Amino acid sequence: MTSEMQPGRETKVNERDKEISAPLLALFTRTDHLTIGRVCGSEDHGVWRISALPGDTVLARVAVSCLVKPQLDDLVQLYQTARGCWVLAILERSGDAEAVVLDFGAASLRIQAHGMLLQASDRLDFEAVQIASRADVVTEVAAERYTHVRGTDSTRAGNTFVHTEGHLGMHAQSAVVSAEALIKIDAGQIHMG
Image (cartoon, rainbow, N blue to C red; front, side):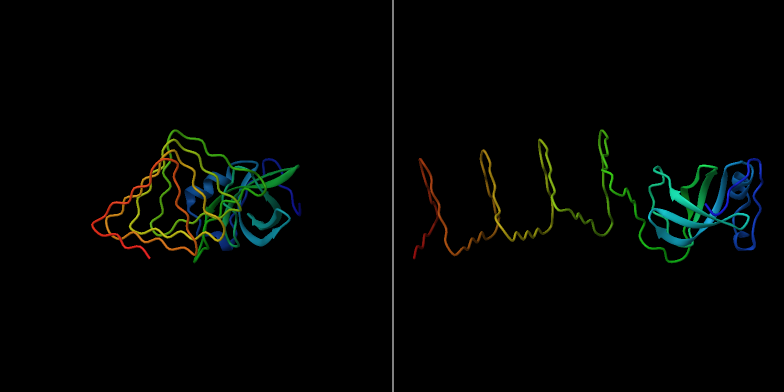
């Protein structure tokens, strides 16, 4: 730590943060260990440089409960003790901020709920080395669907039904259709060869 907060010390407003609303400022000036500051340095091994009120510069780690990753010039809530300093929350983000990043580091994340809706107005992307899903019923509704598999696409099912209202086209370098009991082809016209 480059500075320590003394118990009972009241924080004061510096020139840069005069635009902070009075109720917000009052919340942080009346407690011994809470204060606010601006992120003034990028992350270095999980530590951020914060310009804290009333002008001290402190080094702070992000608290586990602060899920949003800080960015330069963020207004943050700090908790300071003799043992260290932590960013508890991102209070304001100014200007053209980048996307909000929830950073859990190397930890795994588990979300548990009775129901969950994940909604995006434009685009939803999933990126992973491996994606596993398990459900009793999977329902998909889409205007168009494109799937590209570089390797093998394998489906194992009790029964498979394909219903296409328009044209069904299948093309392969080689194809094998086999059945133990019955193969039935029914059409108005059948062309082979």
